[in-house]
Amino acid sequence: MSIITTMTRMWLTRSFKPFQFMNEYDQTLSYQHTEQLGLYIHIPFCNNICSFCPYCKEKYNKERCESYLDYLIREIHAVAGSSSGRKQVTSLYFGGGTPALAIDRLQEIIDAINSHFLITEGVGVELHPENVTVDNLLKLKNIGVTKISIGIQSFQEKFITMLGRTSPDYSKMFKALDEVKLETVSMDFIFALPEQNIDDLKADIAMAFANGANHIAIYPFIDFSFTDSTIPAMRKKEKRKLLDEITLYCESKGYHRDSIWTFSNNAHIKYSSMTRDNFLGFGCSATTLLKDQFKINTFSIDEYEKRIAENKLPTSLTIRFTERQRMIYYLFWTAYSTSISSHDFQAFFKKPLGKAYGLELWLAKILGFIKVDGDVYKMTLKGAFYYHYYENYYTLSYIDKMWGIMRKEAFPKEIHF
Image 1 (spheres, rainbow, N blue to C red):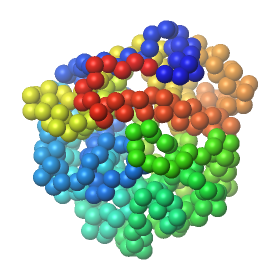
Image 2: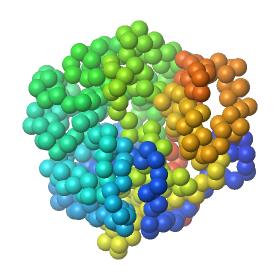
Image 3: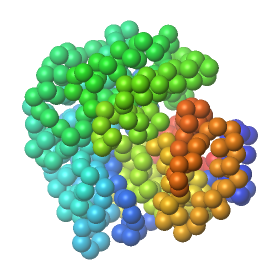
Image 4: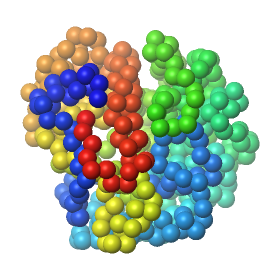
């Protein structure tokens, strides 16, 4: 692990103790008294495997997918079945993989969720552009899906080819979005590809908002060591310039920024499965975050099913947080929304944010990373870039290591950071 991440971790947690993920788990998860609890379900099957995608997935096979979904439903009941009543949760998101490959069984999965949880902010599903048809959108709407996120990556052939994908017939997609209305239509794009400039991204953004999107996400290309991608990473200086240009362009158009990489044409429209104080994850590779722990399920579909068949949770690794470690995790992912509320921090930890990290907040303000608005700390343009830069560094230092190991080992003994 880099000396930079090690020193940063020790300073912010006020401890020499590393982030320690161990091969252990709780058979019963204590989520009943959590606030702002979200749900995530992972469906790891794709018709085609994109070389740049780091997520847990495999080539679609109908029989294997059907079996997996049976065990997924069993996991939901195993986690939630011992609790009395229906727990109120914010939202439910389906990711992957390509959840639309299981579209005819999503109702069954949602029914299992609804038997234990009461969803207050809607259901979201990730879609490949080829999945966006009138028939599929009607099916999704009829089972209660209110939000979709479409993985466009780029409308431009040169970048789609670079990413190893083929362009679908976008006119059919646009027609379907016009015919079947949903609360949130988000479109995902990748920036920081070789020779990509702001005009390329402006064209993509304009195309999205003109053809059914009311929300966009523009994520940086990340060169994970375990993917088969051969695309070179953009230099830091160029990436910063591009991120600043994207932000200024979206702001000039009046788009609302609700996270580092997401914008909408309506402040009430959001699509994010990440910014939750707590969440339960179901499916292989899915993660769960609670007040005192973070756990991640095995990446192996075979071992996932085997564990559930044995009436055990498919957890691969668990970290038991110290209070400071949990504070850092909370701040890191809350900052993704570009602001942190002192009130919310105190409500969660029963301690003032200024007392816990007053020096760091003062320094961030002096350096021009944040500005203060009442009890809220808001990122500046400069702060947003450096958050992005550190998040990217964190991703390569932590997630790249963990996911790289877990793709090879179903249940590693331990991983330290």
